[in-house]
Image (cartoon, rainbow, N blue to C red; front, side, top):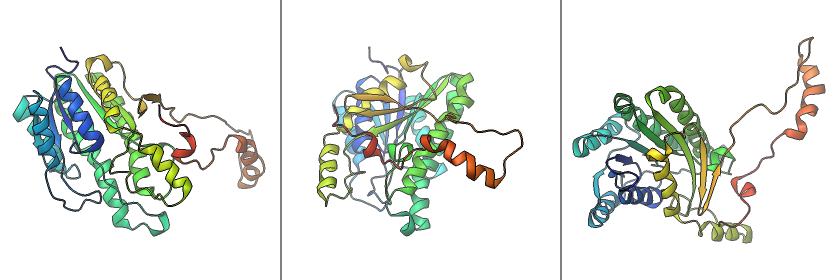
Length: 303
């Protein structure tokens, strides 16, 4: 008996990388899988081939059940079509893995509105669209699991990715809200920050010795290492886990903190701008967070 026997999962952006690994692992665990992938380049432009069909063929050849879907998560109609594909082909939907993504990297002062909007549309709007399309079915059956891919770019920070960071941190808020709103229906929602060398990060500059060292470290991060954790979250064994933020980095699994007050200043007289400047900033200064990037926090080689 597999951990996902009898269950049906939808994985978006499952034609390559992290999504592909998750789709395979879900199928290996017994789930029927809807493999969604547009088959486009990282910037959303058309590309040749159908990676979703290739993944389905490999799953079926290994004895699993899967069907391909090519709709866009950025379109509400496309999200609804994905859920319909699960229902039409397999009769139900139990798990949604929001993994589809794109990149339009640029320094903030050079980022165009189109670059910002395109990334928000896929990552954040796409996660809402697919999650919302599945919600009535999860509610009706009294169960369901959402797994949303966030990133340390949003949780910690990175240079030249304001659009990606905003989308990925927004996904954390979306996941928590879903967990709160749907807990009474037995539905859970969690966010996972995956560390993996995929085409999503293959464009990282490697010109300086520091950059080259970082890239060599990133190349050690295996996309398939994310999949077992996602399967565990989606299975009945993860039924009590909801509203959390995790990271998976090869053989390391981390639970992230969530924002809570760490210092408070008060005065009986009420604050003015002058007294705030005189007292509050200095009082809080020791607890201000530095402008860290993800690499400044995850400084050790992956295990």
